[in-house]
Structures are given as structure tokens and as C-alpha cells.
Image (cartoon, rainbow, N blue to C red; front, side, top):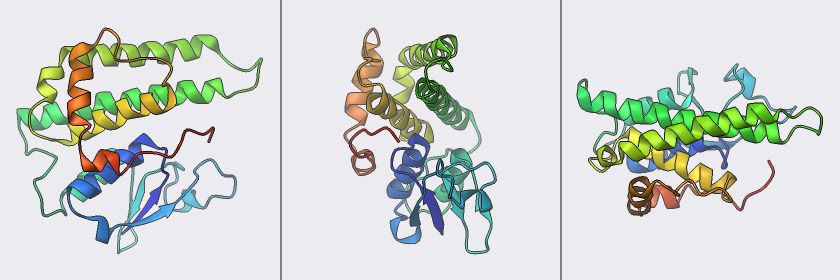
Amino acid sequence: MKLRWSPTSPYVRKVMMVVIERGLEDRVERVATDPWSADTDLPRENPLGKVPALTLADGTTLFDSPVVAEYLDTLGDRAPLFPPAGPARWSALRFQAVADGICDAAILRRLESMRPDGERSVNWMERQRKAVARALDLLEADAAALGGEDTIGTLAVLAALAYLDFRFGDEDWREGRPALAAWFDKASDRDSLRRTAPPVQRLQ
């Protein structure tokens, strides 16, 4: 399998955490990809031009991160991260959706901030900031539910919060959210999160 990969993408980080947690590193070839490059051939495999994208042996390409993560989860020989049908599954998928939504809003805000003066929308950036704040408040209220078994929701929330530290480190998401901060500090002590840390912050 071939994974189109970027080290700063929180969606890729989530998928790579699944790869590590499920013991699949020897089966996944990582292909460094800059989805923003004008010369990238990524759209030939994912017409949306996004990473991660996983190309299977038969040439089928899976995207985006929830689909890639669930497919990989079916292959590993360790405890699955996607619970079977039932309340636990919907809880895990809900957490994943909230976490991916945090990443969506944070990335939109960051991209807007990189636009030239005069083209930047302060209102749009503030809308995304508020979306992240509301999602974080939800996670604070539900932090106790994150403390159970590891699921795709756990990994997704870890990746999202780590992305906020990476790109918005000057804004402390922990303030006013002690339960979520305590959970993150404890849950962060895991090999898959350490090994997928992005490089030193950069503009791209």
C-alpha cells in the first residue's frame, strides 16, 4: 500500500497513528507529498488534491482520513480502534468528527491568515476560531468519556489538540478546560503520538 503523506497534516498524523497502533508500518509505503505544490501529481490519485490518500495493491485509492483509518484498522493484528456497531462505535465516530472539525476550522483560519493584506477576512478567521473554541468546550464537557478504551476518537482528538499546539501555540486551548488538559497530558504519553510529531514549525 502507498500512503500519500505530509508530516504537518493532522489528518495524516491520525492515520499514521493508526498504522503504528495496528502494527502496519512494514505494509505501508509513505510517499512525501506537498498538496499545495503546483507540480504535484496527487490529483491523479485523489481528485480532491488532499492527503492522506491510500493506494491499494489493486490500484484503488481511498480518501479521506476517516475512510483510510477505518480501512487500515481492518488489517492490523492488534486491538481494533473502530468499535463494532453499537453505542461505543457512535461515541468513537463522534469524537473523530469533532476532532476532524477542529482541524478543518484551524486550517481554514490559518490559510486565511496567510492571504495578502487587503484580501484577508478577519470575520472569517474569527468564525473559525469560535468553531474551534466551541468544539473544545464540548470535549471539555465530555472529557470523562475519552478516558476509556483507545479508539479512533481518542487518536483523532490527540492529533487535533497537538495540531493546535503546533500551529497556534501562542493560544492556550487548555485555559478553562482542566479536564481536557489533564486527559491530553496523560493520553499523550504514547509511542504513536511521539513518533508522528511534525517537524519544527514552518510556514508551509
